[in-house]
Structures are given as structure tokens and as C-alpha cells.
Amino acid sequence: IPDYDAPPQLVKPMERNTRYVNAVLTIPKGTLFPMCGMNLAFDRELIGPAMYFGLMGEGQPWGRYDDMWAGWCVKVICDHLGLGVKTGLPYIWHSKASNPFVNLKKEYKGIFWQEDIIPFFQQVTFSDEDTDVYSCMTSLAAQVRDGLKTLDPYFEKLADGMLAWVDAWRMLNNKLV
Image 1 (tube, helix red, strand yellow):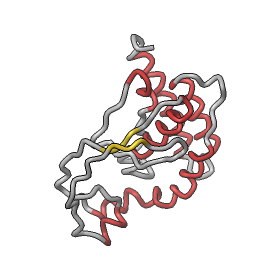
Image 2 (cartoon, rainbow, N blue to C red):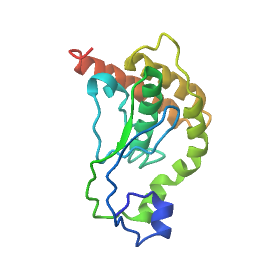
Image 3 (cartoon, rainbow, N blue to C red):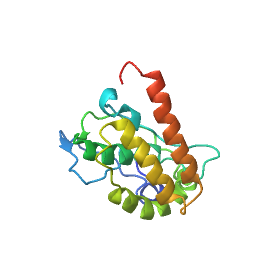
């Protein structure tokens, strides 16, 4: 069963993956992608502090965008640091479709917010001083706060969460720093 967001899930309820594609692709520099957290591997030393899935769930204004948010953050940081990002194998068996109406309620704001969030990530820049994932993530949090706060006050809290994540990562993984 494809892992669709609510609108395609509603219009393609019977669609199934019927073929296996044996491929691994490098996502080109400057290109974003919808990372899925269901089947994910990453080098924690190189990019771990950027793998922040955001503030999602009960009480938050949007849901089901956590893995895509992390993917967008990771991708712009990897592009800046000259690190590659791949997508493709291995596959997972996704056998239960979630309720598209429940999903639509969770995704509603994100469907509209993407119209601003994607261009935001496309224009993110880092300074020459941002030479590691910690400094990049700190810079990105500041850009999220400044660039997306007019979209919703949530993004100021999200920027705070990004900084708390970086601090926690540094504290809990100090042997990697």
C-alpha cells in the first residue's frame, strides 16, 4: 500500500504497488525530496543532529509532516556540507492504509503551508562559518524562526525545538563531537 498523504489516498483508494524497483538514487544538490521515516538509515556522526522530526502530534497545528520536515532540514544541510543523500532500497512492507479522513484533518494546514515551506527551504543559505551539522542546524533554526513565523506562531516553537534538539544531541552524544 503506498504511503500517500490524504488527498491521493482519497482519490486512489485501491492503488497498490505492483512492482519492485531495484534502484538507489542520489538526490541532486538543490533538490528536496519527501523523506519517509518508516525505513531510514543515516550516519549519526555526520548528520544525526539534523535528524529532528519536529513538533507533531496531539496539540500541534499539523501532523504527518514530521519525516518530511526532517528530510528537508537534512537535505539543505547535506547540500551545504557536501554530503550525499540517497533514496531507494530497501523496501518495507506497508500493509495497512491509515484513515484518509483522519489524515486529512492532521495534514490540512501542511497541504497549504507547503506552498511557503518549500520555497523557504529552496532559499535557505548558510555562512562559511557553518562547517558542521551543529552550526548548520542552529543557523537553520534561526532562519525558520525569522522566515516562517508569519505563517504561524508554531514555527517559532519549532525553531526552539530544533535548538533544544541540537543541545540535547550534543549533551547525549558528546563522545561523537
